[in-house]
Length: 118
Image 1: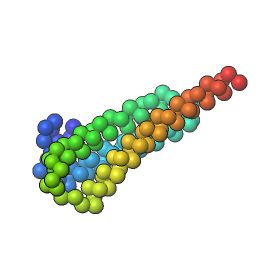
Image 2: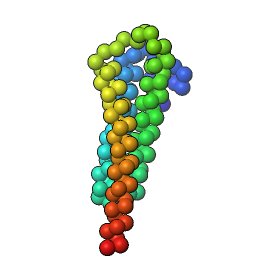
Image 3: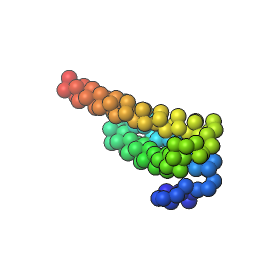
Image 4: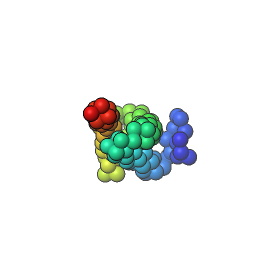
């Protein structure tokens, strides 16, 4: 957890918190794509490491998102701006990429096993 956050509160610096959400989400996306590249190259150990990093980053981003939702209470208490929407888009995309990468990595793993048998 960064200096901006504790387990129960979000920094009063809203913009920094949103940037932190963006950074964790972007890191998760990048790590998932790297995991996919490593699997395509046949390095499943490195692939697993990158996916673990991606999932850890999504956990951190999701914690921030959950705390922001709690602060907003569905009442529009938090200011929504373009960077906030952008950060949410990054998180959603990272989560979708993780799901697809998990399936594709499994396909690469099966393909590699079939090539060994042939």
